[in-house]
Image 1 (cartoon, one colour):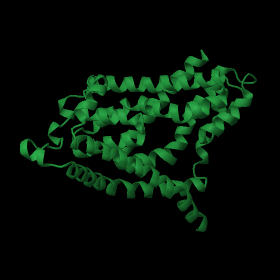
Image 2: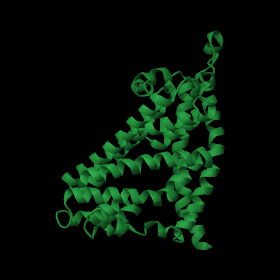
Image 3: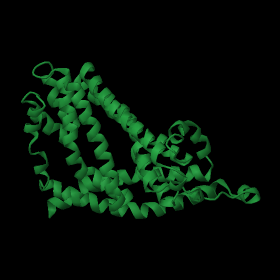
Image 4: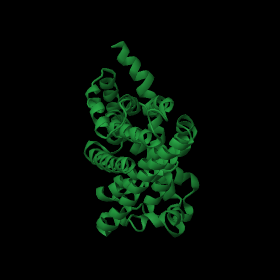
Length: 320
């Protein structure tokens, strides 16, 4: 009982607080953008993405925000879906289009300052380039899906907050706009944060009790099947749990027994295997917290299918 309580206090509370903060920022930015009419200016930058995908201009604010904070971007999309501006299908398309911009944020916070120095320039750039190509391909799929599947029926312009006009608009002070945005943000957080905390706590307890060990069974068979060195199984296992540790594990083995292509392939397979672990540990709590179980499951399935599919294709290309 004591160890579970320590886990909740030391790990879960800080994690939930951090995510809640970023969600609050995202939702607040969405509300402020509407209150102050910033959407029409931001839309100019994102129009090449939202236009072909048949998404409303407001979604462009979330797409661009994702490059700074994926969590904030998701929070903004949740606000637009909750208001009825975009339906479920349009939200899934927007999430898919967001993929590359979420990756861009990680280049500056993780890949460039951490991973490339560990792996060295050649392997590091190869790996980051492969991940960039995968993310960009998924974004392109999202744009094409929006062009093919979305129409005016998936967007409800009447759900946009009605702007006051004339004298009423002039009378609304800056403080009143900020207060209105804050009230909308608080309403959203009261729904998201409790759900987020409950699911994260449940998953953390199950993980601490090794409930997910079976997810890594068969790794050695998989790496042998694609012709990788025997040492790759251990790297994949480490990489699946922690990317930095996995990179540190393979770095001393570059050149022998791993060629650069084999090293990148091993890390990509580690990424595929890690989806099973990260889905339970991070994706389910995060997505369920934002969207609820029903739509959150759809988001997880779409994200996982696209990422695993394009990673598998990249692995095949590297092994040819």
